[in-house]
Amino acid sequence: MTEERKTQKLSDLIEIKHGYAFKSSQFEKSQDDSLHIVLTPGNYTEDATLEFNKQNTKRLIDDDIPESFLFEKGELTIVMTDLSSKMKILGKPAFISSDNILHNQRIGRIVFKCSNLEPRYLYFYLTTKLFLDNIKETATGTMVRHTAPKRILSNRLLLPPLSEQKRIVVILDEAFGAIARAKENAARNLANARELFDSYLNRVFTEKGEGWEDASIEQCFKVRSGDFLPKKKMDPTGAVPVYGGNGKTGTHSESNLSGSNVIIGRVGAKCGNVRSIHQPIWLTDNAFYVSQFYHEFDHDFLSTVLNWVNLRDTANQAAQPVISYQTIKSVVIPFQKNISDQIATVQRFDDLSQKVSRLEKSYKQKLAALDELKQSLLQ
Image (spheres, one colour):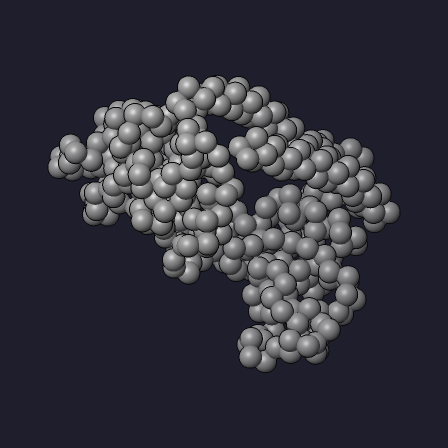
């Protein structure tokens, strides 16, 4: 390798400065454009860009603005803390997009020590799998993962002449622009595929024809809660799945429900989520099951209807959402009176769902392939 194309430690080329330790009382979520944004790891995307929306934009609410910690537009930064153990943004770079952004702690500010390093050339290097894998391997922490300037600066960068760096940047900008447009199209088609199914479902349940009627849940069926089962009483070698409010939670040697059942999450993240189970299970007291029917229902059809009406909307809005028979009994559901018609409707749903799933799989594969193409180009 010639001297012109030697590798150099990042520590010879750049410095990384820590941000200001803002107190949590100094900033809050806000869309007030007159206030400065306090940059946080939550503003970084997996695509190495910055995103500011209603949920993640935090702004300084006092007048004490540390001027030396105010970014200039176009500066290059790097994430040094990832709140997720999966480290999807740890080490990711991003350019500052406006003049009103403050340098917060755990965000690295990259300062160039030499004039023969093109910023976007460095940016592309910081998005390579080689660099990011090294950052992940040297990260500290368990649930929250951290890196540090010293660990970042120990990496080595192949540094061709400045003119070649600029030529490479032009090529990558053009290629990545085309890839970004292709990803946008694939993502839009992925969303359209799901909307196709949801639209069909809405049309079936709202544009009802002959043979349909509406009735409240208390006119259609009664529910009962499952049975309390502490985790220490579960049998990890058992063949019977244990279901609760958040889905499958383990296995047991005994069942308290057999045959086919409609179960409804009662509490937790999947509160109001409905599924039909066609095997013996143990149902915990975090879920309901339909214990008595006043109309004839195909269980898969009823599960689809109940998910469509969204029982979670009836939950008591406490720290943890909870539904009860009292909160759901007045919910009105549409259904076909003839069970053979219900079965035929479910079959149409299943057929369309399978087609949509194949489309979704295809678009997800395209998105993954485009990401792999980006890394191939960088390599």
